[in-house]
Length: 308
Image 1 (cartoon, rainbow, N blue to C red):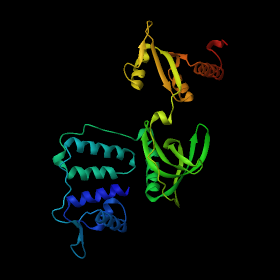
Image 2 (cartoon, one colour; image 1 turned 90 degrees about the vertical axis):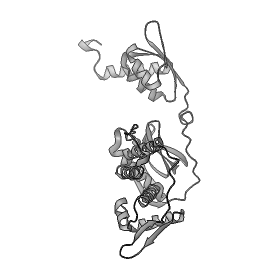
Image 3 (cartoon, rainbow, N blue to C red; image 1 turned 60 degrees about the vertical axis):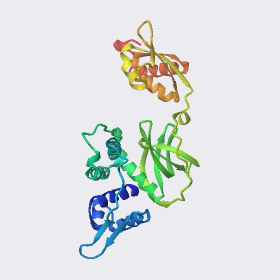
Image 4 (cartoon, rainbow, N blue to C red; image 1 turned 180 degrees about the vertical axis):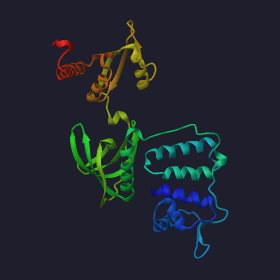
């Protein structure tokens, strides 16, 4: 992204006395023309950059200029590096890794000891996720329409959107934009998108609001679950909801009372426990599980030993 490249160029200029445009173009894997535009943008931002032509010429920052980093502590720098490392896990390139090296090289006095925070945002779908994120980033920066096929519980459809934000929330990646089919802002999960393409069609940027990522707003919880889990399922309840999420019963089973937003997802989640859970409420969930169990028995040929 352009802003990342500008930060990277400024970091290089702060660490090196002079550098040429071809050197910057090679380092950031862009054209010399792009570097020249970036230098102009830095000048407009008030950075006192000097350029000189001919043999021995190049790009440099005016003598005596520096970015005041005294407000950054060692912990601050560790947090910055952890954030960059997390972006590198889904970037599909080594750009953020290179940027980390540049920051570390010029900030050794702020960084002590080994890294203590490691963040990987790539999920199980890194090979397909990184190209999607890269394509969406380009479309957002270029203000180009984004096209893709979307797979939802209601069916498949081709969508065209005006992309504004890439969002990581609820352990998943989304793109937020104006959907031309629905005539409204929508969040689309990247793992449900296929054939993601940046078109050459421009769009006029709307005054897009920052997406409201409140889980209560996006996923209203109006289903109350009451279920009894076997004691050896305690670790799963703690993993998902934390200690103290259940009430231990006299028979040792664990009573869980939670509110949920989606019956289909809740049904699938209950099935992962097999016979280690008994649903008390709601009745519709009990009926769903019974119907599915009967269907599976029929699919697999009834009970063993020929009993029907």
